Image (cartoon, rainbow, N blue to C red; front, side, top):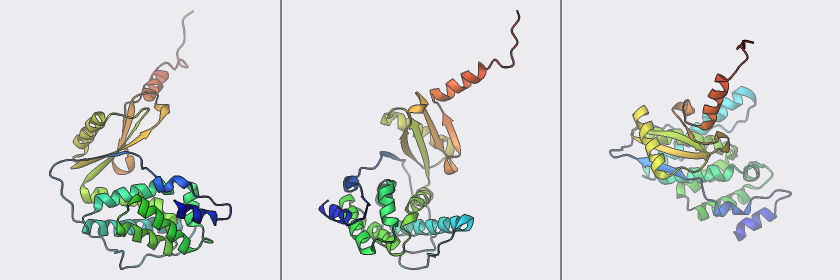
Length: 252
């Protein structure tokens, strides 16, 4: 923590939240069913070889290049983790990283080209040590900082999740509710999603949303394309639609 405070003290009008070294990720329920085995997936890029462009570009072309680079970085990290039999542990690392970098101040600090790479590396050391990252996760962050591609970290995290799901035949389901659901209820939801998808594993992420009033929603499928809506909000919207009186003429 002292090291973190020393790093942030040197910034000009930049402050990193002091709680990032004691960061606790959002709860994720990983429901692995019996008989799980990793699927073979050939990843062309390696952290110790290959080439990922660092060219910057604007517009649609730039977005496509960034997406390609993010996918390549994610695949490289997943390949190393899978080879080392640390895929689950590395996934936990990525989830922590995604949560940390979701803070705009942290993201801006690492994306700032005027801050020396040595300073960024030192802060990565502090974060990796306090979060007990895998050694290759720490080295991966070094690579992103050295290549000045750390701004891709959120896209890389999303791509890594897709690769993880492919390697482990896992279906991701995002459960949104007003209050935290009990683990047995989440297990029931996971079983239902497994029946619908035929996946060996179902991974649940939970999100709280007071606007639902009550009940819950479940998003799954490719990029969350499928929705199970059991919320009171939806029921109220359906009732409101049924009560629309615009086309009704009353007898007088």
